[in-house]
Image 1 (tube, one colour):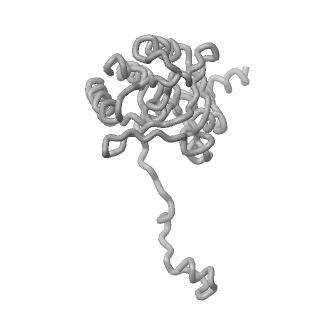
Image 2 (image 1 turned 60 degrees about the vertical axis):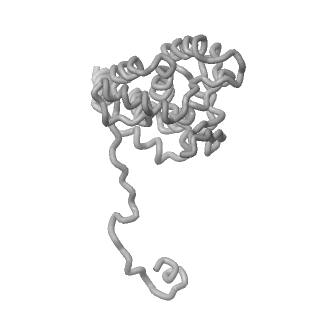
Length: 215
């Protein structure tokens, strides 16, 4: 019908369903800082860092798996996302560059997470630049994650919700859309805007700021 309108065969398409063209994704659950710490502690020692990177550096699962020793700059306290790793149904590992230019990025690592990352590399990562930081398949990581979320009473949390939680925390600190886009590797504003919704904690910060203005 849209083609018929474009070809001027009809004046208006009769196919008009209000809201049909709008996708409304279900609201994803958010973990608290305390829950993330508990989740990390319930993971095997070699996989604890995966939870911390996903939440505090807002990395995707494939980006966590793709990190190599050469991607970590301890002196600058940053990590670089240069490739991703996923596991196909066949069991084969697929290694790719990030899908978009925005996805290829350098992320500042918070101090406590950097300390955990350095300790992880000293214990579980080989000495070569190309050695992987997290050397497991998606299935192994998924099984460990499932046990951890059940153990802390958050069976509703998916691993990706750690990234979602971290970006929500960042938005609550007052991060601008452009800052969220850069940190998350989003190519469009629409993806970052979802984290800009008001939170009770952020609303209190704003109220306190207004109180200061009032003297």
